[in-house]
Image (cartoon, rainbow, N blue to C red; front, side):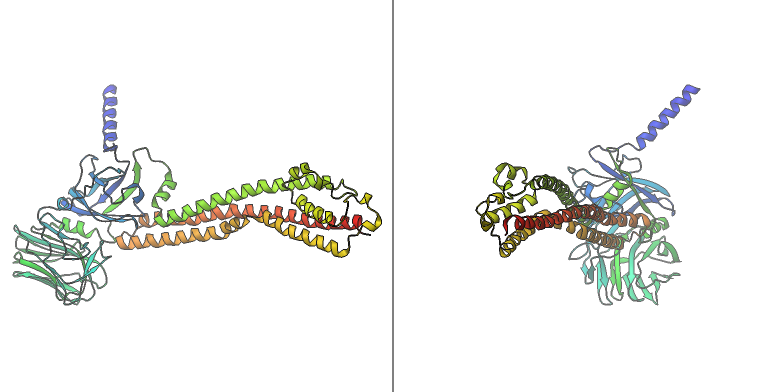
Length: 555
């Protein structure tokens, strides 16, 4: 019995492992999709997956999304899908997935990360045979049916909206309209759409034996002898889901996925359907069907709005085991502007570190060379030009600014006296006048300015890093926050999981700016103090040197 129990446990572990096995090793990344559908089991439900910088790593996918694949919860069955929108630059995508069976709790997998994968987006296969679907995502022309029947609009006089409920949408005034072709109905009929009324009155839809219109926000629908006034009024300036179903002689009306009224005596609408010609506002995602949609199907469609909870995306998984924890999540959520800001800051940090290291070595050499030179200089007594006559000294003190100042003074002295050894000069040959000493001091001051310039050379790069780094980081953060909120507004996906990664990633740019400025500030202050000390030493040396010149070569 114990052996049997062990065998059963091993089999269960194998099945558990298989359920989480990798579908295809050619794809390097995947993301779990969790679906919560309290409305009950639904067949052939098109589900909208909204991808944005807060929940998807666009840099790991192909530039056009061609490597996307959607698999069922068994991680083996590919699901039909199509890409309504893919904007890799602004990191925004809308993916429609056909779920053959959507239970109360379901899972699916989104695979990506295969540069060689051909595109698999298939709009015709995403919807059932009874559907006509209008996304309004065309740039111009009449709206095209994304469903399998190709029932594109005959006439469209409305205005296209670039950012609507999902991607593009249509806007109508009281005179504009959309003419949709007749749909073959097999014992039932359905119309589903998202509306954002600008006015709460006017005709909404019309077809043979069918009409729908608004009166003070109340949606009134008539189909044959059936007439229904919605129990829930529409609100202006807000997206709401409206669905009308005719099934077995019963007219059913739904507002935001919930039943809003029904009546008997209904007949299936006939002929083309006209949307508008009295309606003022926006419309998007119009789906018609030549069959009666269930209440659960309508509820699923309505659950995909801005406040919907139907879809939740998990963390990215890698075929190589992933890792990285929270830092990986942050880097995956970085937008393009964030990467640019951090890239610029990384270059600034490298330059700042290089300047600090190179300058520290240089200052140390200068300090050591100055000390060695002063030891030799103070050994001089009467011949102040003795060190300048030795080429070995020039090589030994090439890093010493004090030696170069001394060299200036020695040249000036050689132009004014016959012999720099004061012990060989008679009193009348010691002819350095106060004016000559002032001239020598002026030459030394000029040398001091040049030496100070050499000491402070490239220090300006540290000040740029100190003052500019935080502002570049802040710019990246502001742009990242703007993009995050703009994407959320465009997708309507308002939740903490959507907002937090984008905001946190945007703040990384500010953190990077501080990471550049803080070490640069410490290094600048340290080097500046060392440079000030060396400069002070040069001023003291000039005074000492001029005093010795006056003492030895003036009468």
